[in-house]
Image (cartoon, rainbow, N blue to C red):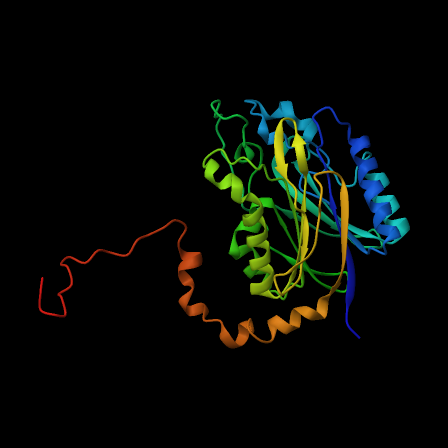
Length: 326
């Protein structure tokens, strides 16, 4: 008897700056109901699903953007999603901007977060994005800002894995998916499903030559992470033309083999589903990627001991020519 988990990747089309939370939650509920009709047990929503991607605008005073953040989850706007999911017996993962408060109500931290909720409505965990891309200072010459490092700080908790949905579940957000360490840290905890929300502009301002490769790179990093760690990966996008910026889309569900088993066809609200055999993970975890048998961590210490690139020293003299010539 294999462990089957039917997952829905609930892509969202654009969420505009003027869209109210309630209207966005209605869209999430519509996708949730689609999932219920298809027998889905877990629905995954995108990064910053409740708002537009506000780091594309720079403000000097962050308090002017407090309304984009959630200070509790659930709250009045999202409670209907929590209630309906519990009534239907469907779990979900939801990306949102989080603002934590101290006892006086003052802001202490700002995170790009994702909450995981079980089928009975219980909160499994909240993950806070680690790899924060973009820039911290105003760059007015850009066609749009990517000021995530101004709006968010890296999460303090690392990459966790939790017992949920009959398996071992991990989470990551957007830029996290580009880093192999993300998957490997979870792989070393036996992860069987990685849930990733993302909001990726097709135009990459620092190097536009990468624009044509946006879809390829998106598939590459998630498929590699799935295969090299023997895990399912569910990548869910905010897609389409949002506030003048074209977002990638191409939400997908990827098997432990690295194969894409489902992918969205539009840049609108769209639900794709797959029945994921969690026992499939063992085919890779117990063969090619049997970590206990094949890993050599004593030779990987540079990965955690060093942050940037350190080149090896140059030879003081050129090597001699084996034919006796200089």
